[in-house]
Amino acid sequence: MNNLTKFNLNEISEKITKPWSPENIETVNDYVVRIARFDGKYHWHKHDKEDEIFLVFKGRIKIQTKAGNIILEEGEGVKIPKGLEHCPISLEPSIVLLFEPRKIKSKGD
Image (cartoon, rainbow, N blue to C red; front, side):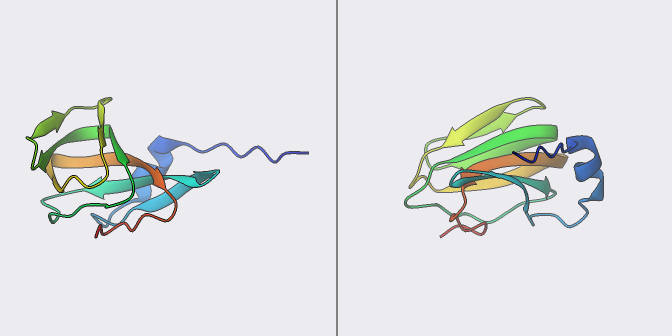
């Protein structure tokens, strides 16, 4: 029998206080759903072998890339293709979901 475990994004997001420190919510096969508080500016980085998805749950962020910048509002997301250098910046304190392979380094390459 499968164990079904419900999670609540509102409750989880309220407990996250440290910015730029993703926490795993759930694993699906070789992928993980992570949640993080974005506050301020992260560093430029890339993932040479993995794509990454950012989905804004609360707040507003900008992702600078070498291909151009994109602003994400609540409920919006974007896929950052592997190898694309990027730099996330919060335009206000934000809660962001990350969908990425489990082996991806949270800090980038």
